[in-house]
Image (cartoon, rainbow, N blue to C red; front, side, top):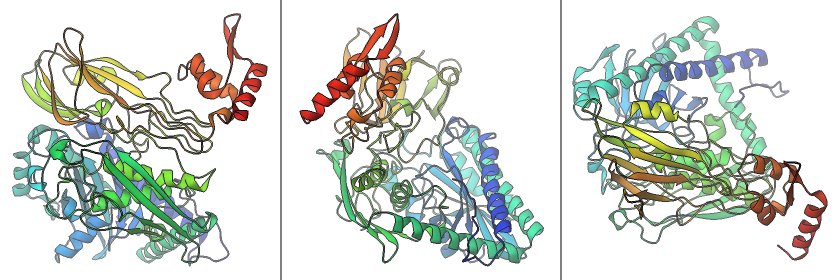
Length: 603
């Protein structure tokens, strides 16, 4: 996103050049928060994969500025300071609060959200917010605890606790957390200090901006920035066709606790209202909340809907309170998406169902026709390429738990672009990093037998999806426990506007004698011995538009890159490729004739 402030005849009560400069100043603060945490955290989930987000809200909690945030983390940040403001009447300089409870505005228990008030001249002006995923939060199983039957099986829920007071550590809270999570002393405490340093860095920078420009100018800018966001969003809404659109995507059957043996439909109805200059997303027509931890929370529902809507508007629209106020979500409590009723389990609220909701919203816009919307993409990101591993390292005899990040492929095609190769899921949106195989093997007692993209797994289209990726892992020395959360085994990502589906996910293990044995797609604890290899994929992204309309030279390039075989080029795209003097080339006459025949036959 580019926070550039254009000149306008209407004006915002502040010099446009100063407006532009200040928008960049605040943008830089969030980027410095990111660099601070990325370079100082201990766990790989934060330091290598970048599974965290930073934001600044105004003193009353309204969303103000975030950059490079993970979609499922942002768009809902206002809930955190709003809850804290509601429950504390003595907020003071030097405080820092910690929230991980989804019933206190957080995404899920696995994300620890630190937020510090920023005072200037005794006035609460901002909150510096950092949200980072934790490798462990003290529940019975490592990973995302999708099998939880209620919140009481998800580890400690912290509904905004003061962890720093007058810039000093609250030893009782810190001692409690060290003793209630795995590797609390070594990993959690190190990450806590790194996340704290991130919000403190923002606090200092924000005060310096007030010093440099004056607090009244800063306050004037913050309100103008929100107004600017709202004006731009209103304009974007009026540029879309005024229409009601509906779409349904399906989640695979969920055997955990017999939660959804027939699968879960996710339904959205979207009204683009020019008179009100609003986009209204109705998600009330959805199943009741599940008896497992895959329910979306209020926060992840909000971010998923907002993320889906923002995917179809101009990237220049700043995602602040002003812009987001033009998106209305109609929801009900007690549904699988919307807002769960306590004590519904929500440990896995950032993945699968939430990702599917995000994808359903952004795919729905394809029903407006080109150039709008996306095909369906991979929504089961925490399958094996992003598995959580725990066990005892035979090299040190020390217990460990962490997550690997070898994602690849899965991005949906959309107008003008093929699917993103490091997409992950809609809730990640390509923001997180892919790790190195060699680093993973050094860090964990594993051998990565295979980590690569798969030929002929991308959904064909005028703009194809990204291919599927496969990961194969063998434990070294001792058995290990893997947590994996597939989605797309029975319902792979579909294409739109004539595009075709991507390849489904797979999940199995290979025994010592070479037998292939299916393993559950969703599991908190799959045990694999050193004589076995566990195998899993991310799904291929769906295609956007008619494959027969894809540029034949782009198909040839895909063949050369081994994304598409020569046979699939012919079958799926109607492109005839021949080898001349050892070089692959498009037979233009043969391709033109074949495509014309297929169109005549209605293929």
